[in-house]
Length: 400
Image 1 (cartoon, rainbow, N blue to C red):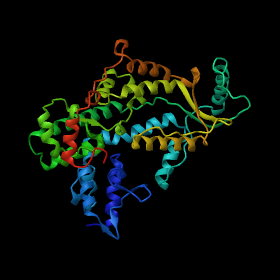
Image 2: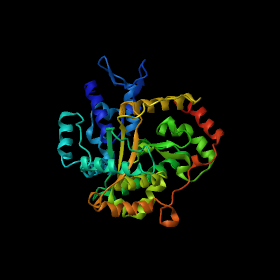
Image 3: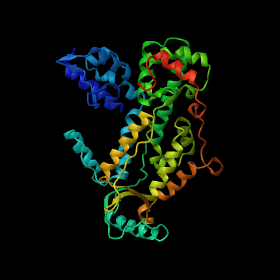
Image 4: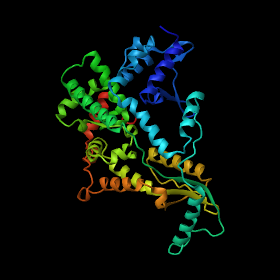
């Protein structure tokens, strides 16, 4: 076995290659309720239980991880090009959004292993701010109080969007849909018989990369083979034939391909993607709007202080509201924020306006040319017995 720390670094590097969050699987809360990552090496010794869990998540053999077998570790990246294309796609999106120094910044981040501050979208901040003030003055005529005469705009945040071009989008998405179909095939095969060792590893890496979760209890995490075997009797008893009646994809794994013009121009691809992520239509509409507008949020210098009133009996919801209040206080200096959309000029929109119109149509009603969003199991009345059968089988409660 190689040096313990080298093994941990090797495992972490594979997580990064596959776009997986190490801390999602290996973390704990401190006495101060702070979530921290758990190291695999303590006092020079490797935690073999964590290594075994990592092997399951990554679809690898424990021995290959312990011997730093990089050739074996790369096999899924070769078999499923989507894994490698993902980062290239993100880079293309970022180049479209950030200023021309993006590539230089990324190089510095890789060399120094730090996150460098990035200057946002290529637009004239001063010109947008002037138009913002003019628009607020105009709105003040029929909505008094919109413009605060004599006050200054503080903590201004300008957010917008742009379409990128990615020549390999078709290959990336073809690999993505191939991964979905392969996972579907292995899932149903596992309901009838045990998968062999290689099939188990393949199923596990697909589940990790795609974020496959049980649709009823997604909080329980990825539906790796060990969990699938426990739930198999329940799935078989339900006798459903649609893969997505059993599972869902973690929304955090959604790569938002509508940011790419090539995606927008391929209606069939858009429909296939919405079939997998039904919530994509809403996100597509929001993106089309953001491409043609600047979303400006700020606080007037004379704005009222942000106040918080407790009115929720649910402790989980209450905590969420408190955290949101704290984030707003930090972002806007404790002042009540204001949000408004400022339309872009024709020059600022450029050719993106054409793609925004198409995307808006695809995300609209079916009767007006929109793609169809399938109904999901969670949109139906809650089936308590189904939820409870899964929870009791796995142990614990749904929110663990």
